[in-house]
Amino acid sequence: MMQIGCYQLAAPFALAPMAGITDKPFRQLCRDFGAGWAVSEMLTSDPKLQQTRKTLQRADTEGESGVRVVQIAGSDPQQMADIARYNVIRGAQIIDINMGCPAKKICNVLAGSALLQNEALVASILQAVVDAVAVPVTLKTRLGWDDDHCNILTIGDIAEKAGIAALAVHGRTRTQMYHGTARYELITQLRQQIRIPLWVNGDITSPQKAAKVMLQTGANGVMVGRAAQGQPWLFRDLRYFYLHGCLPSALTVAEHANIIRHHIQSIHDFYGEYIGVRIARKHIGWYVAALPDGANFRRTVNKVEEACEQLQMIDDYLDRQVAQLNAWPCAYRENMH
Image (cartoon, rainbow, N blue to C red; front, side):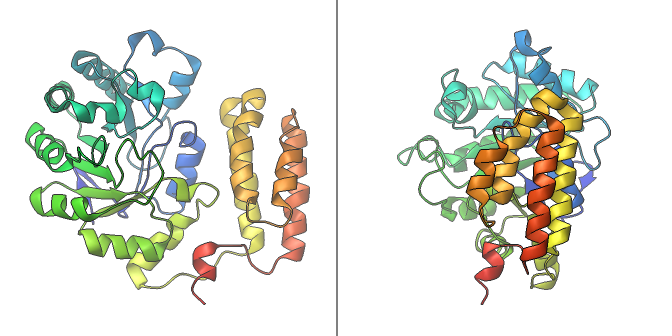
């Protein structure tokens, strides 16, 4: 079981923070299925952007179950300390620092994974944030900037010395972005070097792979990002497989359909109809990707502007799946046979 600061996690499975995806409705859904840890979307440390609608919605953890973890990003130690304090006042129970985001607009301002090129600045930021707040501070990062500069062992050492409570490492470099395959050898070495809890992240697409990678690396937990898109029930299967060594019985097609309906409705409720309809589109695309005629349905439903029409189209489409399908498509279940 993972212990981070004073918090004991119910399960060693985390939803990785993803900008534009891990909003409050999706975090809560993944928690409901067994994610023991769900981090907010990344918040900028730029004081000029603190009161924008987007930042306020990203920072909203009101009424969330589980530990409320807010992720911050920036390159100025004082600004990072200030935004950490501000979010703790607003209810954050843990502050997570982003040094893993590979996006150009983040790296161009020397934040996210760009910081891995400046170890002294990494140390200054980590120390400033840890000293600024009384709650645990965690760090999300990558193997390094590029293949010639994989400095995660040094970064891990800096993090532990600064008082970071847990570390999550994506098994790719910044220049890899999300291409190629994640590598876990350095994460295995890091586990032997540091004593703080360690999450392994990158290419963990199934309960079987999660178990294999945890065994290989010795990591305390697994962090899942893109694999949770369109299948939040993955956390149910991860947890069951971890406890029992096999997959649970699959949810019925009708149960899957109800989860999707509920999720889309919760997006509308959280954002309001106009923005909610637009945010829901990518989630609908992921949900229907493997379903019959899913690509056509996605193209059609994406043209709809009204919330009630979007919901009606989803209802009709899902009702057809319930009537026709014997089982919901799932790659890691199909590959078992």
